[in-house]
Structures are given as structure tokens and as C-alpha cells.
Amino acid sequence: MANTNQKIFFKKESDSFYKELKEEIENYFKEKNINKYANNFMYFKMIFFFLIYLGSYSTIFYCPNIYYLIINYSFIGIWGVFLGLNVGHDAAHNAIFKTKKYNQLLVHVFDLLGTNSYNWKNRHVGAHHLYPNVMNMDSDIQQTNVVKIFPSDKHQSFHFIQYLYMPFLYMIYIFRWVVYRDFKDIFSSKIGGYDNSKYPIKEVIKMLLFKFIYLFSFIVLPWLIHELPFYYFLLLFLLLTVFASLCITMVLLSTHVGEDANFPEPNKNGEMPHSWSHHHLITAGDFSTNSFVITHLFGGFNHHVIHHLFQNICHIHYPELTKILIRISKKHGLNYRFKKYLTAAVLSHFKLLYKNRKAFN
Image (cartoon, rainbow, N blue to C red; front, side, top):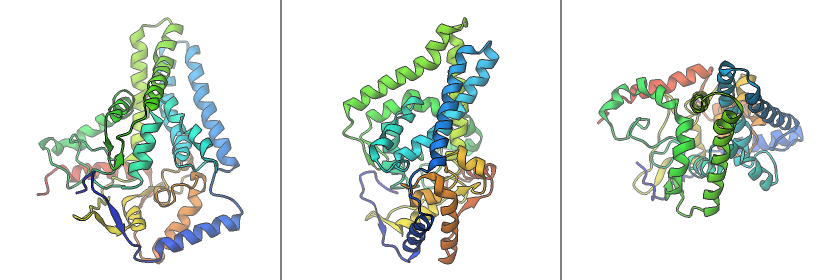
């Protein structure tokens, strides 16, 4: 089990898998005469997702009754996740524009969605992508005794029914993130394997400002416009976060924490059992890679293995790159994990929870 203060390192590459994969991908871009960043279709996608989100928000003020508001808030919750995955996620990896500052600007999509971009990038890029599926180091796989995802984690008696109660707790994922987790991160010196001890005061001010704007926009301002009780809009906001949570957890649970997931641990010297490329190959999994709709709604998250191996490439290229990955993996006799359908990938996570419901020692 990794210690957050432990220096972790991977073995040297044991074969030519990653070298060959990298060369094939470089050749792909050369032959197509394109670069690894966004193309015209990606620019269209970004504009489209922004317009739908802003258009949906503006219609809040014209909804004739509470039933239309319920539909609207529910849709905005889901579409906000799509916006974050398609734009904010790629921007955090500097994968949309070659110029870094333009990517940094688009990362603020997360702030507009009520979640802090600074914390998210540190958690996702600074910890998760460095140590995926490593206990105590991967901050994207939540470290809490409420659920037992890592087989070697401390066992609690209530874990016996975790596969039954976790679907309900996943429904408050976004609400908890907006109103609690971001503030907790300010006072956390370590976020998984990321050193968070030097937290800039300007980021605290920015967080408070954006969260005020977000909550004011979805709770207070609509209340001032509509002749409805204030608590209606509190409940509508909760509804928004429930639908957003259901959407985002479907994606997150489908990539790293299924029944066949691997959770490698370092030895006492901090050495991981696999090389860097092999570690990412065995800890990430794909789903619905042949679905155009899933790929472009979820920002290429379903092509998760290639994303981990080449995180600075825009997701618009993932479908073709995944084909290369499958071929090279097969050539080297390496296991490429995937589920044909999103539903199967989600179900696989709950099979993991069921498997981990008992103590193993």
C-alpha cells in the first residue's frame, strides 16, 4: 500500500510496446497531415455545447410553470457534465490549443459549472494521471471508508451492503463537490499524491467568487424572476446536481473501477510492479468505443486507455488512435480491457463493490 509521502517510480519499459505505439501514432498524424490538437469539428463541438448550455439556462426565466423548470434543471445538470468533459477536460490536458494560455482559459468551464478548476486539475492531472488506481495516491478514486473500492483497503462491516447503498450516495457526488470537497481541498496539504501545501490565496478568492455567481445564477436569480417559493429553487438546484451526478458517475465508474480492475501497489522501496505504459494499460479500461454518440457526448472518455497513454492529444482523434492501440497491444500479447456497452461497464463497477463487500484477510 502506497504512502502519500512515499516516492513512487515505475519499472523501465520491458518491451517495445510503448515505443512502437508512439511511433505508429506519430506516423498517423504525419500521414493525415494533421496535428494532435483540436480540428474544425472540435471547434464546432465546443461552440455547440456552449450554445446549448447557455440557451438552456436562459430558458429558465421563460418557463411557464414548475414542471418545465424541473425538466430544464434536469437537462442542464446532464448537459453541464457533457460540457465539462468535452471542453474543460481536454483544456486541462492542454489538448485543445497548442498555445497553453488558451487552454488555461477554457479550463474555467469547471468554475462556471460550480466546481473549482484549480482543485480539479490538481486532482486529475497532478495525482490521478500520475498514479492511476494506486491506493492513497489516486485522488480520483475517492479515499473514504464509506466505500471499499481497493481490495486491500480497511474493511468495515457496512461494506457488506455497499453495492446497495452506493447508488444513492453517487447521486450526491456533484452536490458534495460543489459545497464541500472544493473547500476541503483548500486545507488539504496532500491530495492523493499531489503536494497541495502551497495553496494560492488568489485561487481561494476566485473559488468564492465563482461559487457565489453559480449559486446566485441557479437559485437566487430565478427566484427573483418567478413567483414561486424560494425553497422550490433550492430543490431544483438539488435536482440539477442529482442528474449531473448520475451522468458523471456513469463515466467515472466505467473506466477504472470495474470487476476486472487492477490495483497495483508499490513495494517497500516505492517501485511499482510494472512499467509506466503497462501500468496505464492494465488500470484503465474502455467502453462503447464504436459509438459515435457516446464518444462525442462524453468527450472521448470511453477511449480511456489511449487517453492515459497520450493525455495531451485532443479526444477528437481517439477513435482512430484506439484502433492503433488495439492492434499494437495484440501484437505484444497485452490485454486491452473494454466493455462493448456503457451499461455493461457501469454494471461491472457494482460487481466490484459486491466482490469487495467482504474482508479478504
